[in-house]
Image (cartoon, rainbow, N blue to C red; front, side, top):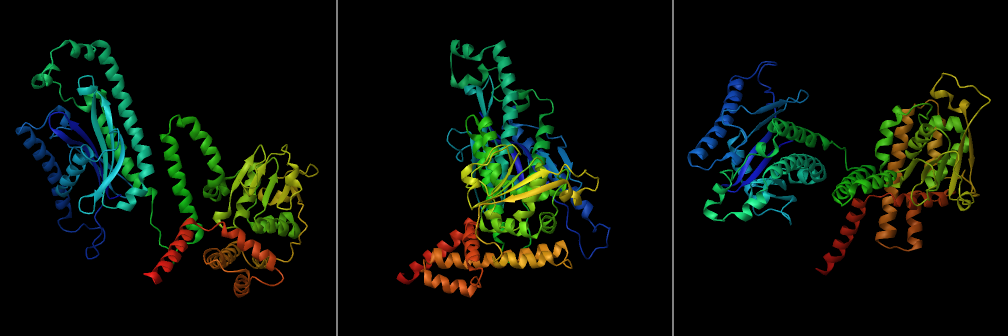
Length: 561
């Protein structure tokens, strides 16, 4: 990540000062004109000169400040002769360097300005907490200010801040929840360590009583504290390897923050599934940040994670399908072979219509694998899943529900035509073999039941085409998956047209019928096609809906203007 992290301190004598700075140095790009494996002439010399220049900058800054009397114990982290700390990422070749000041002269003024602003004017209410500021010229800054207990300081505390400076505003804003979560861990560690030192010093010599009984004079106030107007952070925390620990923490933060968000080359506009996944990830990070900052967030956070897991499990289940223990369904074709063509069609019909699909059995891994392959029939925005539960959950919470064998289905659900139940029962007449995945049908019996009386053999058109692909043994599983992906994209485009026409433009029933005919949604399977299109509308991303509404409002204003 092209950024740097700095620890800043507000000195009582000299004002804002930079204490410690960690920056990432990327390896030089290979020169195509130079020979492979041979460094370009002068590269090693330039690199060495750069390191010496950075060390010289720090030494000059420290020495000049000392000569002017502007450097005290609280303003200094490492001595000028200290070489600093270096960590190298073996995977990328990036070097993480830490010293009191940046090694590059052009960054010195940038960090200096960020330090001054973070400890003077750019603060949040209460003077503790995160804030964002900056501009294109001097960079953008994520700053988190905090206090450290000190028995000899004014008000018994000193003011510090940790700042991250970067030129990419969007990247820094998107990293806000991540940075806030991990910087708070570092800050809490410093505060708790300093609090122990503070309590021990107060136990030996309570400073509040000493100050109350002494004559106060602003001119001699620093001398009344035995000359310790500015104590170093090492003295406040009694941490022997404080700066090495901060170097490790800041280096990891730069590496992790740079790798958590990656750019992908997309062939065309992002799909609706991609947009929905991005929105869910953003909402999840914001919710985690809010719950962590709330009072009593520990118990609430655990309860909230269990509730929000119903909506976010889609993000991780596909990746863990291969890791599920025991027997499992590998694909839609495998599921169709085990259930049989008739039961599979009925089950897939319920999935595409948006009805609640309930699996009840004693093998959570098998049920989860069934949900994973069935979810591929739907857009991501239409999926709400509870993989396995000890109690029934209503349909508005989830359309995929896994239950333990002893859970009773409520009467209003079992008699509803908008749900389907699959009971998974162990076949005791057969013996479990060591064959593994292919023996699901011989180990378990599957019983499918539903109160639906509507025929499922007419449509929708998407299911008819999918069954043709699944029944063709000449097509591999990967080819069928790509066929399904193309079918989903085709019908999602039809959903967008219908949404724009009926919901945004507000056209009547007769015009809507003409559009359905134009989209190829009419015919014998028209009823099922219309139900599918209306259900899939609920899976459209918020980004797409807001874009349509903005475009329509802009079009309405333009004629009057």
